[in-house]
Image 1 (tube, one colour):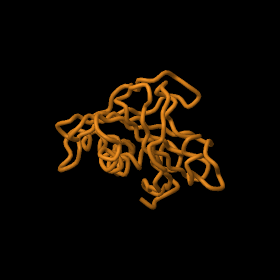
Image 2: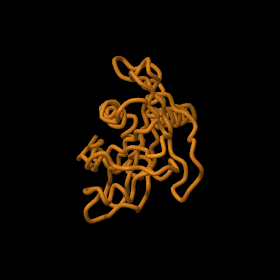
Image 3: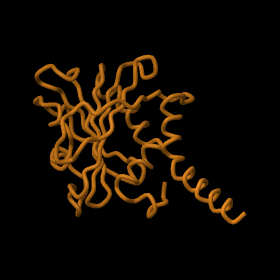
Image 4: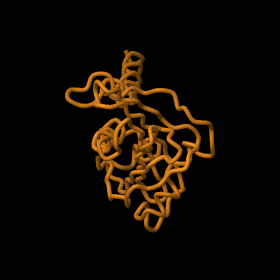
Length: 189
């Protein structure tokens, strides 16, 4: 009987630990009234930050195709000010992984994802690749930053609300906490 209780306790703990992952899959496949995002393979080469997660939302769910790439960069953010100006967003953002020259369309805008704050900024890809338009997002927790890069068939201003809603979803915020090593420390989301 004691063995059965231990097995049940371990099994329940394993299920509880996997709940966010199962929730991500369910949210991505069949959301009610929200875009359906599918996780795909990271398409970029390996660099000092490793690979991240890649998602796609098709036109049937999002109006246009949106490709989204997100990853943490541990210890890479300005610890004193975070991602609070365009220079810091340019430094930590992932626009360089496109392998193309980009030009900012406008100044960065303050954003909040979960408990983190930072900036988003719209870019034009000058060589015509990547659909021509990109949205760069960076938010930080002290010295760590989570960056996202979205490319869509439409203008970045049109895809930004959809991208921000996905990044602010509970499964993605829980993923960010886990990647930043905060899953058992912070409980404010």
